[in-house]
Image (cartoon, rainbow, N blue to C red; front, top):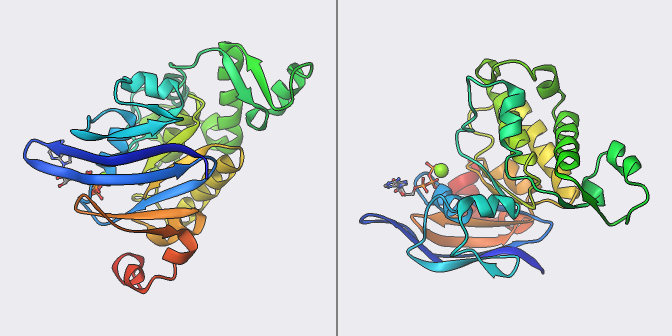
Length: 265
Ligand SMILES: Nc1ncnc2c1ncn2[C@@H]1O[C@H](COP(=O)(O)OP(=O)(O)OP(=O)(O)O)[C@@H](O)[C@H]1O
Ligand SMILES: [Mg+2]
């Protein structure tokens, strides 16, 4: 299967603590890949290393056939690796709209797959190719904003409100919306369900599936293993920095040891 990103024997240390002890994963293009595991296993460290906030001590990360070792974090974002961090990290004193525009900082003019265009832009660029279209920076930002407001109408309603006034679920939507403003090719999410009511989690996961269907590859870290495996194609389980299990999501869902450890049955 064609890969959008893979890690090769990735090792990461914080001083004397070795948080990743050689992690090799493959994230196939167009799929949803899940990273599961208990607290402190190194899940967030893996995502931070992929987005470049943390630097590996050895090993490599290959994105679209290129090593990321010498690629700065903001360049990774520009190339389409967009990280929705643990705890959302939105700017509470800024408005919803301002938070969204921060996510558009790295946008440059370029090509956008037809499946990711809103009806407005499909029409406006009807003379162009039907697989992808060349857009200006302004058009891309407008397209992304319209998409975010379609997926999350509540963000449109509250566009001028300070982000701190949003509920937890709405803040998570804003964090995902902000990521979408940067035109992700690979969306990486760190525990998007944390602290949210089951119904909100369901609606957010449904949107992740819809985003995936427009061609965005997804790498998701979750402690909510059951719900995550239901939307994922493939899963990895990390424990104290090591890979202990991997397999197709459907297989992991039936794995007795995994059920006992993480699925709470
Ligand atoms: N900045 C840091 N400095 C020192 N140690 C750190 C730092 N960040 C993480 N660690 C340690 O690295 C290990 C892995 O942490 P990490 O946050 O990646 O785990 P996690 O799987 O995301 O956990 P959780 O499920 O609680 O979010 C832990 O032992 C943690 O204490
Ligand atoms: Mg974490």
